[in-house]
Image (cartoon, rainbow, N blue to C red; front, side, top):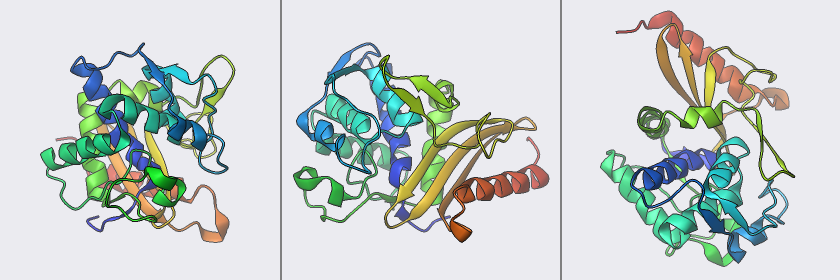
Length: 250
């Protein structure tokens, strides 16, 4: 639980928290239009890096947050980081300060998307290495998830969706296969975020309401036995079963 390792797109949960915080503080509005700079736009045409096109080059904060949380859109998360911080690097500094406020000291953050720096060309965080990526422990991830769910529970209205309209042309589709209608469906699951890291493997932070308990589970570095695409969801279900069988609401 306390070993720091690559978390990939679970990073976007912290990015989303910073978006909610900026809106809460009046620094951002949900319907504000965000200009897509060349940096995130060029990533949308990079195979394996982006799954949502941003051809209009201008989208609302809400559209970009939906894309970030539902479809794990890297370019959308970078665009939000630039909108809030001015640059992604300054946004990363804000992310680091937030983690420090929560007492998280063993995490390493180098970007807002969770991508390995090797995909980002000249846009990497100053002083970071060309192959670095964000690392955290499972405990760190759980702390972030707890804060976002407690402070901004409306995030669950987004993360519980299996699909959503993005811009009238493109559809957002979830990677969380524990939601209703998905291959690993489990009643009560309403979030939160999947991750896939070059160095840390596949991961998942989940949120569910079972037996009166709001439960947050984290699995990182799950081994996909025989290439099982649902391994992280099987591991999560096992963890949820353990909690349900061994804990009761206080």
